[in-house]
Image 1 (spheres, rainbow, N blue to C red):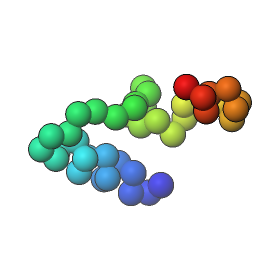
Image 2: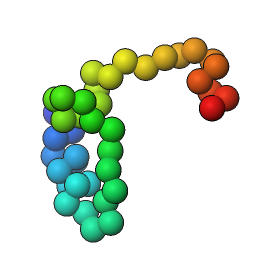
Image 3: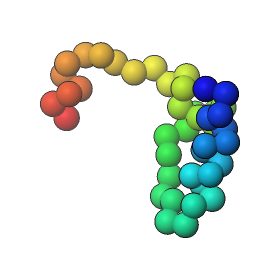
Length: 42
């Protein structure tokens, strides 16, 4: 993930960019997720 900050910066500078999931660190790599199958139906 060495290039993640660079890729995020490119995305944010792109015309029409709307937004992305972020935490306090500026990315979403530390946000926990669930593998619970119930989430798949949402």
